[in-house]
Image (cartoon, rainbow over all chains, first blue to last red; front, top):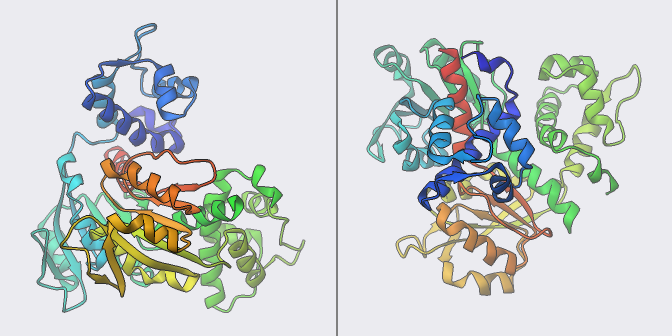
Length: 210
Length: 210
């Protein structure tokens, strides 16, 4: 996997979007598409698209465009979507429950194995058939089960402590919804979904448009 | 508001993060901070920080560092957080409910006025004291009430139709959680929170670390 050193995070962030467009085209039974046509659909320049996809070896054939099925599959492999991920959700309030119920993910090979919380009113509940366990037990759970992804849906004050527990429990990645930046070791992949940052970016643009 | 033309979206995306760190410092009763100290905290280089904040007039004083309270307030004003926003949520499933319950936002001046859904089992419910209304009534609701932000939490197939309704109803901005890119007019600010894109960026990094 040598390409990781030279691919910018901006390109990586664009790949899921390429994949979404390709998925839609596949559903419409389109077989091939040129970078120009993709450009019109997606709003990137054709040269940007060629540059992005060249990062991964270049799937296009001059004059023939891209084979959509092949490109879709290859992007899936690059993103690791040909693999399975066992996940746990820590913090089983509304956001944690929303993610547990977001079954869209499951067809991609994501499986929530357990949920955790400290609130006695939530412990023991089943959300989308996933048990909410006492957070006290997360250590033993992670010892007994290999978990790929820990999803943090706690408040900001608890998030670092949870990240430490997930690290001890040898997860491979953390998906953090708490509005705080976490310290995790280099061996762990970290992705933040800071919803308030996204909202404030929206308000920035709103006040400049009205 | 002339600065909008020259500020890159990367800088804008960093502003909420600056604000979070400044808020934490305020809570710890810290008054001033140098770009070097901020650099150690945030992991940006000091020169990056000076460059970012210079976009907005430069709040620092050579040798004295930044006045944290002032910088915090100014960034809030730049992001439009000194104003109030009335919002509606369209799609009142788990994600919509999670956002309705995310009361953290309210202290910033965000207020959810109503929720909408097509599902008869949800219509009439109250989530965090917000009524879930029949989606059929969204047109008349928007005619009677000025709404600043429409939040789309529907599935991807309904999202564009909802965006059209919100546009007709003269919202100023759309916060889109549906995994699809929307077409909206230039007068409307659009911010996507594509959770699956975020998850796939995580898996990209996970498979390269293990």
